[in-house]
Length: 293
Length: 310
Image 1 (cartoon, chains in turn blue, cyan):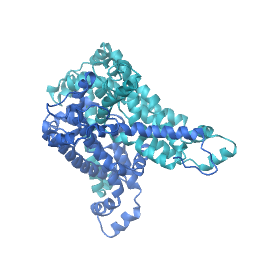
Image 2 (cartoon, rainbow over the protein chains, first blue to last red):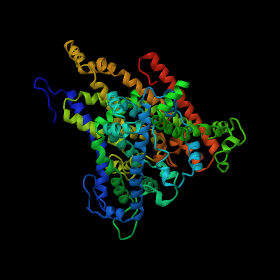
Image 3 (spheres, rainbow over the protein chains, first blue to last red):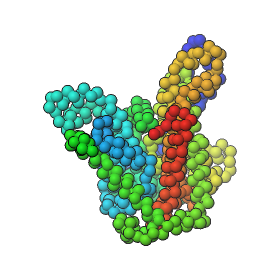
Image 4 (cartoon, one colour):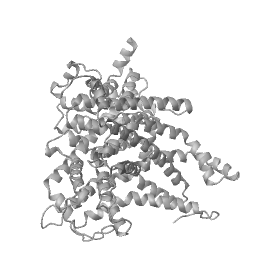
């Protein structure tokens, strides 16, 4: 497993390092694998299910995808992720673009307002009263509008837009292009890597978001997958404490726990799918951008 | 001023972009900040948003009520303990993990282990809580395995015994975000001049010595900046800011004594029991501590080293 240069011996130190790294990988991955196994296992089948289903079945997924509630939640999660990402990327992009010009009038004032908002907030209660007064409660827009702009991504955007060579603007201006044309025809096309990066991160945030759906929305038809997961886990929690989980229906191999595992796989799958794109390059760029701010 | 105004007109589109952002911040950040006055007022939600400003002043009544409540000691102790424990573990572990990744000679193992390690960062706490229950509950994987191996007769009460809440919270926090924060430390380590290591080898330094005398000092700036970030959000749960989610999902009537924190108290009294003024007051304590910590740590960092956030 360990490749070494010919001159070097494998020392005990190397073995310990390799063993620890393997351990980290196992401890990280195994929980996901276990849930995957259980989602393909008959909920009522007992026995050794640590590495392979005891009795293989698609019933859990069939139940999940036939249930109009779960399907509604899935659809709502997809909808909020798509609409929220488009809105978030567009809004963050225009603000960061404007802020990236050093000669922007009142720039210092704007920057101060952004930085203060990063480190201080009114807290959750005044925010809750605000959303209520704005009539955002029990509305789809509570998912989109309050999270449309993030100070953090503005900072990342500013450092990205600063990298665009000024010649590009100047030559377009000479050709008579106005600011709007420069922005849409020149700036946006060269910013694709940045747009893709923040789209991924904003999208993952929307997909995972549960608090707004759980507490700002009562309407069952507006609930998202993650808030439904949260309710199920809270309900199952009581069952875990005592006897494990009981069968949801008679004559069925599906239990509340086995359906929970299927729902978990459905929630995690999209993240695994975009994971290769959240590659180190993106991750590094964002993290370092954030720290250098 | 006149100069600025003419510049403003020339930059009409850019100014519209920037002002749209400022309007957003005004509504969603600055209006709630003004709403903090609720903490000092006799306010109820029926009064609407204008009632925040017209209701009667009550001074520090709600602060006193919180300080005198029977749960105050436990809530404050839990908040401080969880936050400090996370600072002690969740902050250094990513550094150790980055050093470990840097020390391995197998590039494949390094890449694999690192790529896998930051997956949990992108998974929501809802799912992590679900995983925690399936692994640590009395009928969960860990207990089943321990019983099968005959290591214990009775299931261990990871999630129900009150005193187990702190170690569980810290473990899950490290599990979820260790890989994510290791990325930035590893990036800093990669930037260290390799000739330094060669010179040290010629002087007979071993790998531990090189780690201690070259790698760690070289990434001091990065460590300082990340430490300020962690301190600024100390009561929120440090780097991952996980305190609320953990106490909300893993807290229950059995471990309440060790899991209830400022944030869950704000949530329960404010959003569940509609005591908005009281909850705002409790929330304000946390905001003030955070703000003070970030200024103090930033000031200290600027004095002690050249790294600082602002």
